[in-house]
Amino acid sequence: MRVRLASSLTISHIAAECRLTPSHFARCFRRSTGVAPHEYLSQLRVKEAKRLMTTTKLPLADIALICGFGDQSYFVRVFSRRVGTSPGAWRRARSEG
Image (cartoon, rainbow, N blue to C red; front, top):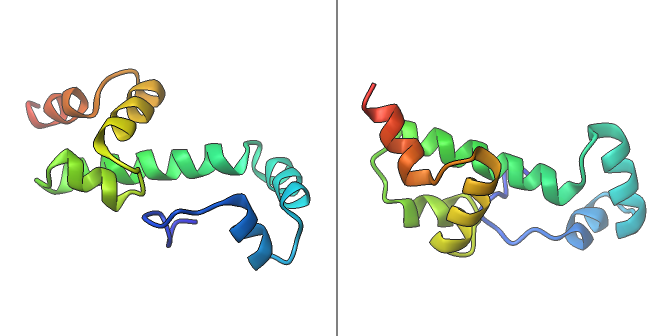
């Protein structure tokens, strides 16, 4: 999943690569990681976005696409829900220190 963050990954595609049915893959994945595949992928994408925001000056729209979010508004919604603040505010707080 880490290698293909920017692509549109689906449980069906990942399960097929593992030669499992989507439901069996999702059950096994949750059992071994403690979270659903979609949740795990979302965590990876937010983590990569944080890394890019602290190490580059790329615009948030570019970071959103690089990390596999469909657009900047979806990125802002997911990031804000997970982190508790918007990506712009999060980035500014790290650059002011």
